[in-house]
Length: 255
Image 1 (spheres, rainbow, N blue to C red):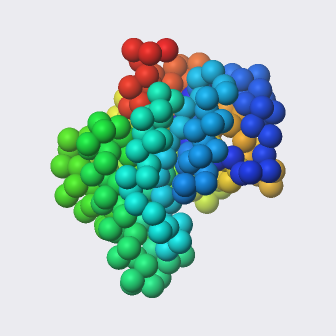
Image 2: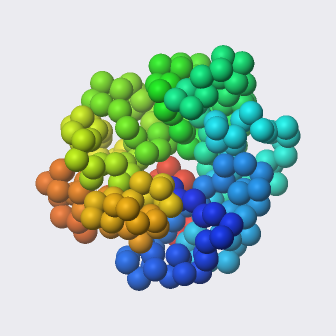
């Protein structure tokens, strides 16, 4: 399996989490950077473990505190373990202030330009901002660069829109939640070569691990649910989504 999106907090034990994931059959994983501090940790952590990769960006909820420059992130993108620009995007659920939202849009578009420049996918966060997110993706990427819409929460209509814009759709533990029927239905609209799985750990632990601190080892439960919904064997779903991840991250020729 390939957990395409997980986070580590400073107090986490990376080795324990990594070994538990490998024991569960997670052969590859992408550690997500959300601000300069977490990007620093992601870079040094990914260097320590086989088949661990990382991304680097500024999460929309951290935009208001970001005082740096996008060029500060070039040191991350030049590292051989870096596979993506992100986590970037828009979050209008928590940030209602128009001035902050405009800054989110500005930072988002600048990182998308970097994604095109580097020919690396952007990892997109979008909450209560699907129309604005889609507009930015269309205007800036112009179908020149694929991207990942991570932890997808939308329905069938929106999933088709994002796929048409060049998106891979990543499903998290939310797909196992009782009230996520519209999300589960969206799977039928996603081409098989555009489906990814993730944990978004330490958040959103899947059923039957609800209430526990999530970790990459638990991506097996996301895998099992998605496989069931698509009438595929877990093994085939693992192979499919792992290959999709290697394709979008351009890893097929490396490992």
